[in-house]
Image (tube, rainbow, N blue to C red; front, side, top):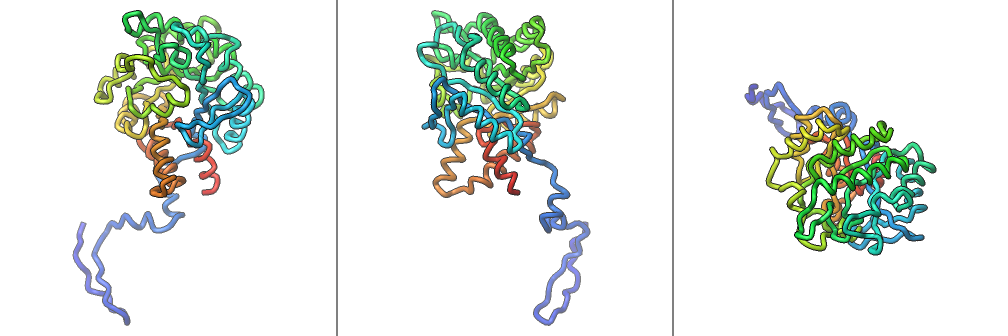
Length: 344
């Protein structure tokens, strides 16, 4: 491409230099209408999944560790789902805050058919049946040890024992009417075992969204505060992935595909966009990415301090996850983002 200078154009006011350019990319940015025509990535309310915290109380309460989020009663949950659906958000994800008295080493409450999550599923499907309900399949909210799996007396997380409990939990949620179960525990073989259990019991239409690459991230702190689900001892490094690794995630992806996952996920999202892109290049399955509580809180804190425009940074952060290759983004900003998009 030539960049020779043309002779200056004479005007009454001044001489205007002109480059001899055959390509001027700015022509595709010159107006909102042109920018809309050439935009490569879209962000729609239907791309968002809204994670919601619930508790077994009569009222709703603010979450100190996550300003702007609440622990919802079941009536409050249903109304929040109704409102977000009216804005175009078509899927919600439920996370329960369980009373300490119901927690146990083997997390039996997680498959109680009269428990909090089954009742919440049933309430949503009765009142807002068009919304897809996704539930977290893991033991940490129900475990007296605060881990995603059953803990041995020596402190080891017992993989195969845990998978048996997870299958019971998934089956319980399926019986309550859930659309998608999302195992977040990172136990080996759990996707295949859950798929087999669901199919044997006639729940062939219940989908599995696997937390395929869930990293042992430091960005989960506010979430654990919301559910009081932090480990009572040790950490989660023996089952969640090392943040230093990416090739290892491809092995997890291959296994989840072979075991019957319908959708796969990368968690966290914003600081793991390389993993989102890597997954997009290596699977045809629908791909989710989870904008986690630490990412949420960083944006909220910066916006509240006046250093960031909250609405603009919400959309930019979500658009970046879509641009990296995600089909859907799980985000606590789902309802807020849908409101913003309705005005743009």
